[in-house]
Length: 408
Image 1 (tube, helix red, strand yellow):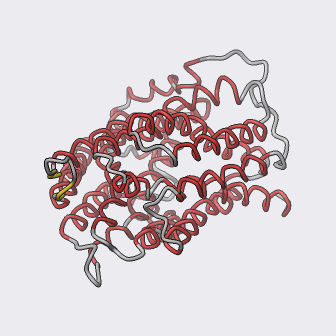
Image 2 (tube, one colour):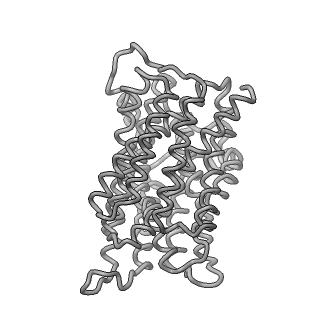
Image 3 (tube, helix red, strand yellow):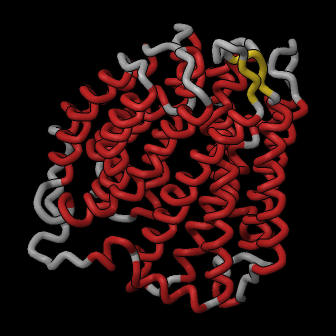
């Protein structure tokens, strides 16, 4: 890949994830401030999951068949910019939900489209893609610092910052390398879009329990994305949006050492460590004090994001890549995307709101008096613990499916 293309794709990835990072992690603190209930917040966070379920249809039936990728990206981001700005002006929970859902239906397909556009212009994706995709993680860190610096983590300004970045991204996409539709003229098959051909892999108990475990662990992990911002802001942690970026910093580190760990631990142990990390993180949150001068336990929970994400999700993607035959490998990855970011995240988002409301005390005016954050965090910790035990008992890594160089 030449330097010009590398720079253009790197900028694309940076802005792509800057948009999401501007509002996603801090949205709950803003919604809490404008008196949304836990259920309202959980519903708002479920929009990305619903959009993740729908986006394969859009990409597979429209973007991949009729229009060049860069033009589709441009239109989606330009429309999304207007919707996200409108979201920042809404105070009614149900109106907020429907408009945010319309926005996420524009944004979520762009995640797959930026990846596929990048792959189309790489000679060796396995070598070139990681160094370009990491720009997305870096941008998430940068936008976290910006939110903290200008103290807009719990304000509508964060949504407007994302809208502004979406506008710039939409215009920038017109300058990206031309990427014609990959499936133009081919028949549309719903089973290809949903990855239904990969369902045959579930005849193997190891793959079946991997899918079940992935679904179940995504339910408790959604608590982190939906309510950490509220948790930290309600305890008046200083510079909390900036501190949350420590998780992304460690994500880069653990991604670098992932091959080394895989070679020595194997897939099953890596997945178990990732699951364990989610439970430990919530225990640290439950017994930590974000408002203290040195919130060591809470910061440790944030820092564990690298283990939580890389050891489970990235390892899981590699496992699927090795497990699935070449002909249905893309279908298998699409199925896992649907199960985790779609179905699992949706259930978790809605459930997290119910749990938070259950452990929230209101006065007669329906204003929040107190939240029992200890019990809120111990709930997903217990869920993750149950999933961990079940996965340890029922998932068995077959020697033929091990990632090259790994031992179990």
